[in-house]
Length: 374
Image (tube, rainbow, N blue to C red; front, side, top):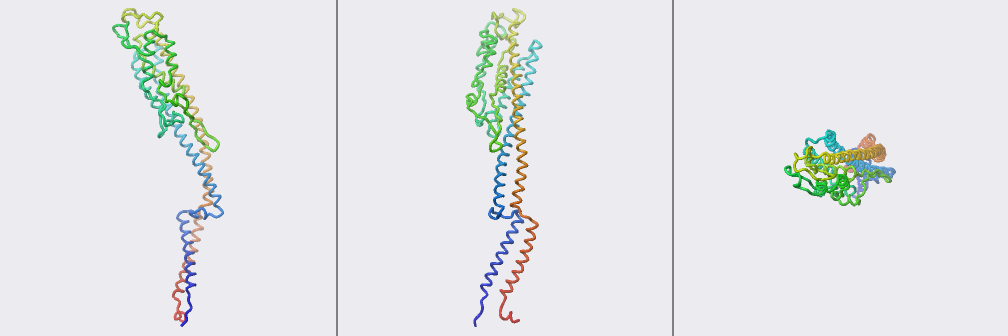
């Protein structure tokens, strides 16, 4: 008996079922991801619009990251400047009030404070953001200042025997020469004002000037400079002034040059002691150091203001980028995001069609001559 095959019809029906199932899976994926497709090719005419918007968003995101990094570093830098100024202003108040009063009741305490502030200022000049030294310029991996003791050696010391004021127990460096009268007070002041940066402990890249600027790129054609080096005049003058104060001999050792440098044998020989001229020399140095610190603080004020202006400008740009990125997000969403309400309706339609197809397939698979004649 010859039969009629329904294989072709079954194959066609299976293909239809697969297509409907794939369509249903695609809609289900849209529901779970919120996206029309998982590939750019599936966007059709929206592909170019999506790719351009994503490229613009990525570029703005990179500039925003640049600004955020610079903003954080400027915050650290201005914070360091504020702490430096706070510490040295406290010391400045102490060293300027005593000369006005005509005495120095506790100069050792002043020296100890200057030593502590000196160490603290050096640490702040070496402030880091991660692995970057913020006051080192573009050579940010190199420590900008490292006190190796050269400045102390350069300054030296001057210490007398309280029982014999004619022979110093210790005499070295410029302080020793000044205390013994080998150089004048003016020469001593000139010497520490013109201290070589290598002696102060600054890095080779700072001393040579080979380190570059630190700039933040905010768009394709613009960047902003937020460089502040540890050997900036304000910074360097503080290092010098604090270093001199912590190494100065006390007033009772009568430092400073005399026109006729013949000290008395003991403190009781020629009252008043120290001689008035030597006191004047000592206070001339103290006043110069106080003026040096005050001017340095003014310079740091100007640097802090400059950094704050740069920070404000970049923050304004960052805010503009935030609005632009929100607009680009809208463009991307329009091109890529699925309309969930519409997708749910389509799923329901496909499900109804799929159920109908399954019913037809079941009927075809169960079709026989006996069933047909029933």
